[in-house]
Length: 82
Image 1 (tube, rainbow, N blue to C red):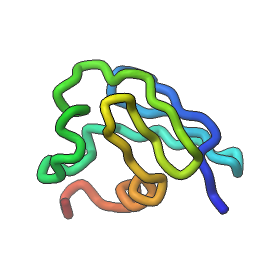
Image 2 (cartoon, rainbow, N blue to C red; image 1 turned 90 degrees about the vertical axis):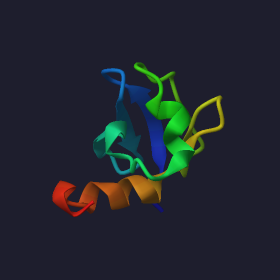
Image 3 (cartoon, helix red, strand yellow; image 1 turned 30 degrees about the vertical axis):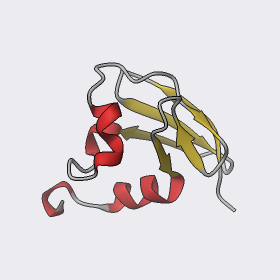
Image 4 (cartoon, one colour; image 1 turned 120 degrees about the vertical axis):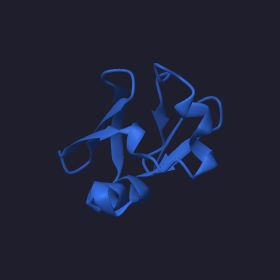
């Protein structure tokens, strides 16, 4: 089963995600949908605080979290189809 082994912040809004299969994902959190208010607390920050992971989710101390499955889904969406 695919899991997150490490997560860090690169440039304030980009997550550097390492998976247990050795692949890396650079995920720009600005791609998270504006209509989804679960991420409002992250959108308001110029620099994201350092996140943590339990393998399935990336989460922050303020309660915001995003699932690996959602990140993978967001990677396949074309920007003009959002």
